[in-house]
Length: 461
Ligand SMILES: *Cc1c(COP(=O)(O)O)cnc(C)c1O
Image (tube, rainbow, N blue to C red):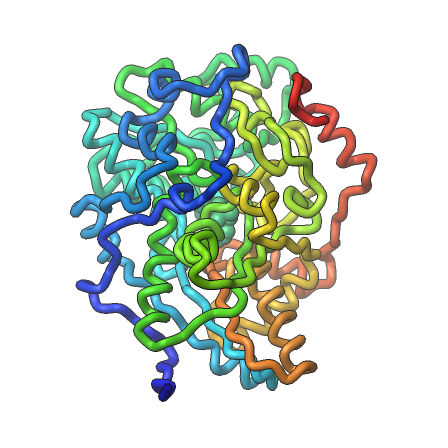
């Protein structure tokens, strides 16, 4: 077999872009556990979910059977503004590391929002518009998801209300202004605009907010305002489905050049980019057609997979959302400050949790100073300034490439480079000034989080 010369960047033609999302649940023998209604402990019905989410998205959320779901033309047209994203052969990094490994990364940072989140934002906004809704609400922490959603809503002329964790609202004014440029209404959370916000402010005056609190506010507004629904940027089955565009594109590009990855690596916050990247490859593994090693990378400060429990838990701190079965640190777990805001979530996608539980995937936790060392090394040779979240994947890709250097193996390593880090320069500054610390929770701290996981027969035994 003659190996084709691999270009530095593989770009698909527009007509080669995926027309369908791939639903990995269709190929899973053990399906992810359903969301439960916390009051009845019964699976959430489509009707119950429809009070919070759009109809079509509820269908996608509950669909464990259909392998392919067509990407509507309007979404495919939007994708063309920033997709296909390049699959890059990291020749410069390989050279620098002097490794026999072949390293590839799929780069999702080539859009103004700066991350892969736009892939699901446009889909969720589209279905809201199709349903004739006026607008959507959401929360944002560091701001990547809010920015992506603001862009998608602007394109479709849909109203967008974003509850932004107050400390980020104050510390990250640039992201806030990008959202406002795209027409979103951005409110620092907790706020006086909701009952739950008022209650939290009364109990904790001066609080700087949390993601869990912002979710509770966004859900309250969505369920109490005519013509609005709530949207979420990660964790949910539907979000992994939309993000499968990353993996399907990667697979098409690799197949074209006869490349077969041995190891596939992605950072994991709620699991959407990792789930999206690995989906078609995981499908092959589940169907027994091929084998790959999958590695999820999480921060040592928020180690859901590596130190969490596999149990039903609340998705939010306010305990208003359904229960999801996942690897979790407990919805009350408050991760110590970490600069990878997008990875500071206590739980993990139910799909990935089930796959990990069944042994189809591995996970590693890495400390943030080591992550920034990898980020800097990468930036200096490959040019792209990576997001701290994405750099978790870079760190493990480099580790694996260095192992190959020792053993002489020529493995092919693929990782997801989810975004750029231009809005994270305070983190880079802390790293350069030697002021960055590695927070690793103690077993006692984790136990406090586990104690908050709901107890009922069959859970947490
Ligand atoms: C949000 C975010 C992540 C983590 O989210 P997942 O749902 O786990 O993919 C990773 N990288 C970047 C750049 C992000 O913005």
